[in-house]
Structures are given as structure tokens and as C-alpha cells.
Amino acid sequence: MNQSKLKQNWIWILFFLILIPVGLLAWKTQQQWLPAVNDMAENGKSKTETDEHGSEEDHHDHDHAGHEESTSLELTSQARKNIGLTEEKVIPVKLQAFTRTLTIPAIVVEVPGKTRVKVVAPMTGIITNVNVIAGEAVQPGRELFKIRLTHEDLVQAQADFLKTLGELDVEDKEIARIKEITDKGVIAGKVLLEREYAKEKLEAILKAQREALLLHGFSEGQVDQIRDNRRLIKEHQVYAPQLHGQSGEVQLPNMAIQRISAPAPGSQGTVNARHKSIFIVQSLNISKGDFVQAGDTLCVLADYSDLYLKGQAFEQEADELTRCLENGWSVEAIQEINNKNKELIKNLQIDYLDNQIETDARIFSVFVDLPNKVEHENVRSDGERFITWRFKPGQRMQLRIPVETWKKQIVVPVEAIATEGAESFVFQENGDHFDRRPVHVLYKDQLWAVIQNDGAIFPGDKIALTGAHQMQMALKNKAGGAVDPHAGHNH
Image (tube, rainbow, N blue to C red; front, top):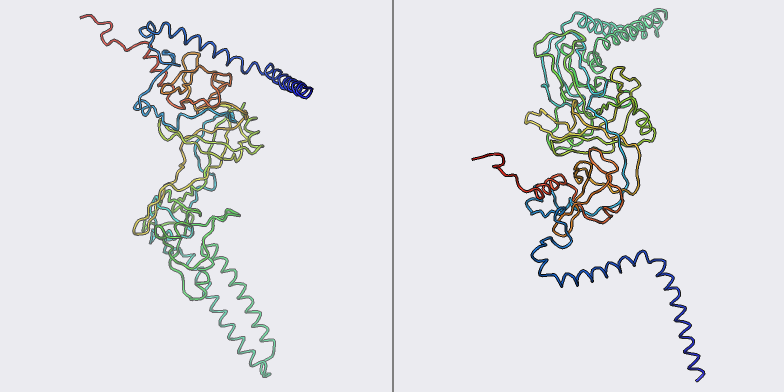
């Protein structure tokens, strides 16, 4: 009997130990579960009233469950396609970081001193060969022109060089002969010494004449060719210059005279060539048979592999641009493909800010490095190669400069926002309908809009990311009815 009573007491003790924490927990969390209980009670009451008056409501209320007819829109599959509302454009909202940007106009420009290279005639003569055409793509080291030398100074400089070479050969032979006689004691050693001095003078003259030929425009290889063959050079080849990465100096290749043809399409040479400088014959100033003098421009080559985006910013925006440059933040460029589509170019870097402000417009320039790439390539059967670059000088874009970053924001494309006066709306998917929801737009630029997280839209809600303006117009037409084509006319 005592054991049974003791067991019953323990049961009551355990019951109160469990009941007290549960009661405290329910009291602390009543704000979370109490509204749900009230809603269930209201729904039960509404259901009872609906059952009592169902027959009357069937004739007077045609709204769909969960929708307000004035703010709800049902779209056919064709209508969805017309406004671009695909499955990828109806996705759940999520909180994310958003970077507020400063947008400034920009234009693609050449890099001064690097993009364009003038090829000039190194010496006077007549153009006998033109190996390129305007618009053709050429690699550094490609032979461009051939000039027949006609200037008297060039001919005389080569002749003097050959004459000195001949005299030096004679002096070497004479020294060898005198040395043999001197060893036998027939001639004094003073004669041999005088001949050696004469040889040193000839070598000094030869060195000076060699430098003179180089200054006239001959390459090291051509001077060596004159020395080895003992013949004057009648023609001179002009090559596409080589841009050396360290100094940027334009030089002619020190190589044997040869023609470098374009590689066959699809070959390994073509693939590797894309990673090197590629010149475009921007302009061709001469024709075959023209007489040119030293220093005349033969053609202008352009290397579009690296360009600049030149932005125009106001004086008041200098601090924000300087902060972006100091922090090393990457900038973005917006390129309009057509009237509807825009392409975003990411991960660009500011090279420098102009140190002068225009006195009239009060603006200054921002230079952003713009790496380029080949978009199309065409190689003819005769080896002539033509390429099309993606970015071209003169193209207009817009630069987006990062200013500050906001954490945990609702970010949507601007196409997801419909505006009517002071109101802004988004369209939330609800079954086969879209319900219009008023929202507060904190910030909006050309691409994105930031919506305040005030309960109008919750993370996880599916909204339409495009076509909001068209859906807003459809709702207005639905509310106002179709326009009477005979309105205002009397028959």
C-alpha cells in the first residue's frame, strides 16, 4: 500500500516538473503561435458562414481563392513568352550583398603611344614590292615593303665600306709577308710595326663605316651580308616592327632577309599568334613604284590587343573614384548590344585618373584598362589574314564605379519593378496567377533595384524578374476595360 502511494506521488512530481517548463516556454513564444491559432479559429468561423451562404455567394463572387481580382493577373503561356517570363525569370527572392555604384559615360579609345605604330622609309628609294593590303593582320617580323636604293649617299657608304674591307685584306697579306721576311733578318722590325699600325687605322675606319651604314637604316644582318658577300645591297626590306615588352622600343628584326607568311588556319602557329601582338594595317600610304625619301610614312599599324575605356566624371566625384583606385576595387562596364540587351563586362581595373580638370565642363577623365580579344578571323587561300576585334575605338559604354556595399538586401533587376506615380510594385507568383505587391525601393540604377525588407516581400517568395511594366499595363486595361473604337463619334 505504501509503495503504491509513493509511486503515485512520484508521478505527480514528474508531471509538475514537465508542466512548469512547458508552460513557461508557451508563454514566452505566444507571439509566434497565438496568431496562427487565431487564424485557424477565424478560418473555421468563415468556413461555417460560407457554408450557410454558399448559394448566394456563388452568384455574386467570382474571385479565385487567395486572389484579389483588381491586383491579380493570369497570363497565358503565349503571354509569358511575349514578355520573356521563362522559368529562369521566376525565382525565389533571397538576401544578398549589393554594391552601390556610380555610373559615368565612357568611350573606347586607343592607348597613346602604344596602339598605333608608324612605319617609315629608312632610306631613299623606289618601292618595288608592297606585300600587304589595308585592313590585313600582320605579325611582328612580317616583310611589308621592298625598296630599291637610289640615293647616292647610300651607294657611296656601301662602296666605302667595301673599299676599306679590300684594303684591310691587302694589309693582312702584306703583314704576313713582311713577318716572314723579318724572321729571316732581311727587313728591320720597324717596317712590320708600321704595317700593324696601318692595319689598326683601317680597322678603326671600317668600324666607323659600319656604324654609318647602321645609321643609314641597314640592319646588322645586312651589314654582315655586305662584308661576307662583298657586294652592294641594291634592295632593302621593311619589316613589321617588334614591340619589346620591357622597353616598348620599336626595332627591326636582326635576322636574315626572308618573307614570313601567315600560318595556315587552324595550325598551331595560329593559336600561338593570338597570344602575341597582332598588327592591323590601319592605313597604307604608298603604292608600288612610288619614290620615297628617308622618313616618309609608308603605313600605319594598329595593335588593338589592349585599349582604354575613357570615362568622363564630374569634379565632385573625384573622392569616390580615388577611394575605388586606392582600394583596388574592380569596376564594370555596360555595353549596349541592341535596344533591348546589355552586356556587363566585369573585373576591369582603373589605370589612372587624369590630373587635369576641364575648366568649362568641370569634368576629368578616368582611364580603365580594357583587354581585347579576337572575335572573328578569316584567312584567305593566299595567306592574307583578317581579324575582327571585339572592342573598337569609338564604341560608347558606361562605367559602373563601386562606392559602398550593403549587406543582406533584396536585390532584383529593374525589369522586375513597375512604377505607377509614387507607387512601385513587384509581381509575386501565386499558383497560376501573379499578385501585385507594393514595395519600397531603396535604390535603383540602370540594372538593379534594392527593395526594403519590410514584410511586403519575404525571402523565398517567387517574383517575376522581368515584364513588370507589361503586367502593370495589363492590370490597368483589365480594370478599365477595352477602349470603345466608336467613342466620340456619332453616326
